Length: 256
Image 1 (cartoon, rainbow, N blue to C red):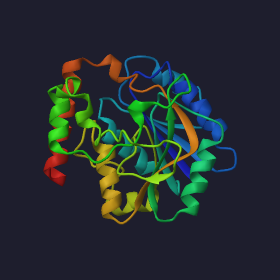
Image 2: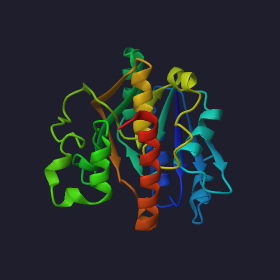
Image 3: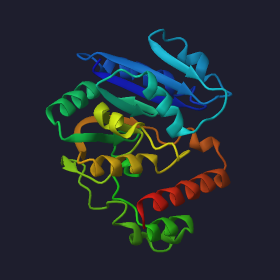
């Protein structure tokens, strides 16, 4: 099996069908499987997914979080490469063929991300690669200081990033992240299980570099990222609490 596509859903009924169809059309010359783990969605997400007989579905009876649910997918995945793909994504053209070919040709790359666009076909600035965070930068975000000093986060937000140039980066977005299976096997998980949501993708990129793999961005493939459709259904307080909890776990693990 060339590629396992793993998707975690929660209240994703409006986007997941288009995502599945885009995955199928994008895997033209590779063998693949799509695994969807639903985190106890109260909407019709599961009903929509069940229309596709070739999709492996895990139905959780509780919301296990993003990292833990992805790890459930890893347990039954058989692909040489694993793509973590959010439900609110639409893969364009033969993007998945291109990304698998890229990983095959670059054995020193552990993780890669592609160009993510918004629904208007423009670069989605909210989902470009980031530099590894520093504690003071994250505290500025938590306390909204960056609203008054907008340039203070330019380093972290990688404002000098050129999306037309293939390059090694600190981290790519977990919404579209292709990972070499041998890296996952070395770690024993896809995402560190200590995180419920947030920072697990950055953490995995740090683990990749620690294990002497490159983390790369390449513009050879594109994907439309509708960004945060499930998050819109959560309260601001819930999101803030989860962000802070994961932030603290990240800096306790990696230092400030």
